[in-house]
Image 1 (tube, one colour):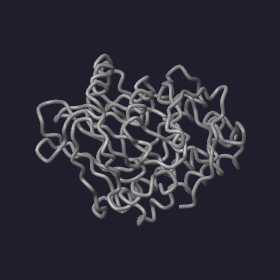
Image 2: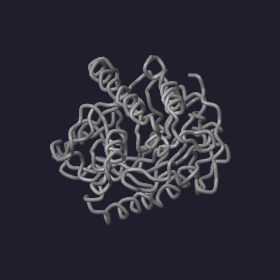
Image 3: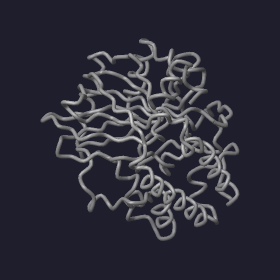
Image 4: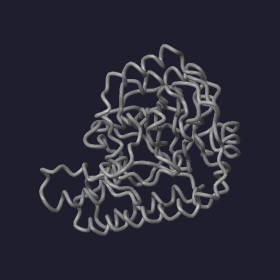
Length: 336
């Protein structure tokens, strides 16, 4: 995180586990977010593709479908959505036209002051919305996501409250404090790079020397890759159980439209929502363009677009990218 956050923001991140940017998204942009997702039915919620077998379509034949079910859907400790509690009313992951609108509005208001010169893939955006009767994701850190595939240990979550969240309302985000003191967090980039090397050693298909998701899914030793992915998931599940009671957390009060930055590879949680209204947050997940040995995909979560925009940290601008015709410029991954 030292290489992507400004000196002051990095110091705040080290201490609190998040950056309070002081930025407020204008009401007009908040209304645009609300209007877009209001038009989307709850049936478009697609978070369950992270851990359900729905990603392997029933029509897919035999061996490849079984592999996709293992590689692209396995997360320990969670059941099929039909047997799990209701999680949010809407949980919609995608790559909407709001990404450049929101990021440009934040850049105009000073987002660049919190960043260094590294560029990011503005990979996808998320709406999470629910009532006090809905569950949230609970205490967790985001492990290696097969559908996302290209990711780093320094991923930045741009987190925007669509209403006030405080002690009275509940629903506040909590994040792990003092992240740089955590041995687990220190290994976050190395573990992803090690998995990329493992895939390459197993003969996974490459593009420009980087492992592709499809190349890993179809190579001859794909079962070994699936086994290693399973091992990573089991390790993540174990560390969550071991650390649940030990992690010191920052609980964050937020005003409507307020913007914070945090790293979703840290442990985080959401407290129970108490209000009779809906709780809604809008998120943009930004992935620094580190050389991880992995190729960014263009689709995820059942054929949904992703990785369509670049956030240039040096120029302070957002632009579209077509990964079919343009390879982004990657930089060396920091050692810590």
